[in-house]
Amino acid sequence: MAQVVLDTSVIAKLFLKEEGSGTATAFKDSYIKGKIDIVMPSLVKYELMNVLKYKGFTKREIIEALEVIRDYGFLILELEDAVINRTAEISVDYDISAYDATFIAFAQDVGAMLYTADRKLLAKVRQVKFVKHFSEFVE
Image (cartoon, rainbow, N blue to C red; front, side, top):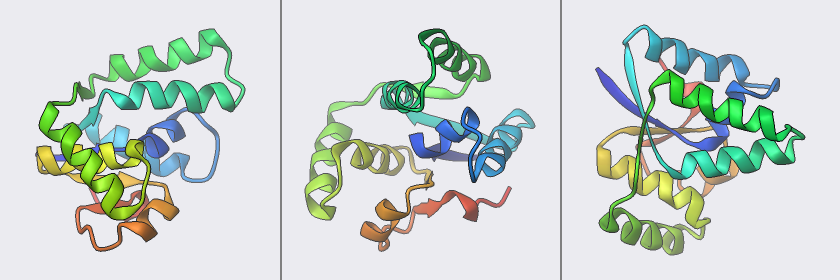
């Protein structure tokens, strides 16, 4: 079974009614059907809280969203020192935020494709072959 990493731009679409929400739901559905494993760094929880807060979600709604993520059973892992060090390298090498670099370093570490909805990020890391736009996902 293929293992994929989803960054926060994709996970947030599970809770936001916006363009691409259906594609984000396709990842979840594939996971539930046992066709893929979804694995993410623990940073996703903090970024998701931040996104939902700025989108006007209440405290309760944010907590419920975190519970939904936990209930799905996605594998959420803490970062090891080697991944943190690689994050710093990627952030500087590609001139991207440490947050975005974290997902790239994590995906590299676990040997998985990283899917993002962030086109600006994709433009900066276009030569990194394991980072794809989430619309490119094929079950």
